[in-house]
Image (cartoon, rainbow, N blue to C red; front, top):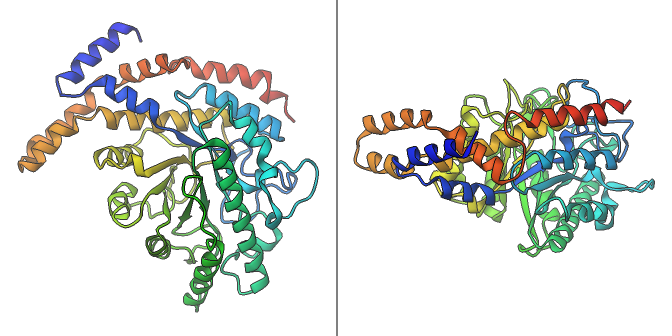
Length: 418
């Protein structure tokens, strides 16, 4: 795509009242939080031999070349970042701590166990977000953590959450940008429970204890994440949408909306404006569920476009933290990061390029016919030329060239891993 192609696209969009230069500037300023767990199938380095266990989540596939060490994971992440336009963030789970060969229990984790991530990230990312890991642990094998009937088990996981908040705050201090620490737990029941109230009462009390210490919002932000169901919790999830929306509203926490955590016929985009009426900010986990929360690689599909359109139309970006959350072990894992990130950014660029002002005028005038016509005709505008210009300005490979770089990287590094 050459400069003349972009110039023609610029003129075409201008006829609709859209400034492509403004769209490109806005896009360059939006960071995604890239999830580390795509690189090693959510295994972490606490007990690499055990891999992912419990939690109602699975990484399916056996494509060769997954990261086996911290060094390999960081190398793969760096390659992915070099192929994604813009400068972005990193999203870490607690099980990715740098243990340096020493066994450390999760309730005893400290910022020092993530200092090597911070040092590495200062040259790679804008900031780091964080997550307690409430799965792949003996005290989570029965599927219950913060809502467990055993007070000792609950206490362990409360301590883990408290430790993770302190880690997040220290990360935020060192980066000078707030760390979003997101609490998601797997607690639930495979079959229909008799007592739905008790676990939710225990979860509320556990969260109150976990969040008791007030942290500087300039360093750290708390988020809570709901789910409709999971593997092993098909009939009942303690931390449902209603539970966490109520809790986040009462406590003024960030509410995490995950694109795979709702019924397939629900629109996550439709929830954004409602939730932001009552909570200060939201965390979005952009994912792709296929029939269930299957965490497929994000595509430039209608649900993803609808999410980004709503963020731009409602002027919600300043109150939204955008993260990716999927893990596909059936394809090249570096390519999965790049495909999902580029797809999310393309959807955002499309939203910036929408002739929203004209559409709003038509809507306010009651002209639904013209609004629908313009929405459809705008889909044929030369978005691709603007996207290629963004890639050129951000000094990353074009749409047709980046996969070649991944193939070279795979041959040189990934194929050498047992």
